[in-house]
Length: 96
Ligand SMILES: [Zn+2]
Image (tube, rainbow, N blue to C red; front, side, top):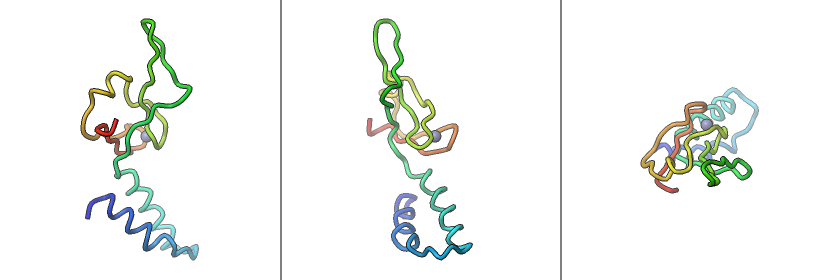
């Protein structure tokens, strides 16, 4: 079982137990921490355009906290995974 499998299992089997107890709070904290370890692709935010040398660039941002990750050309050459320096969200560059 990997991080993604564990996240989905907890959501499916434990998320519906919502009695307002400490257990619910612990599960929600664990889910939030686990969710940041499941790799997500970076996003190009609409409205955030950088201009330079006569070109418009759509840079890459964190899908969770929205902070800057990479300039557009740099993003296309990235491979594998990295972490957002602000929220630690795992980022997968292979899907872009
Ligand atoms: Zn982030």
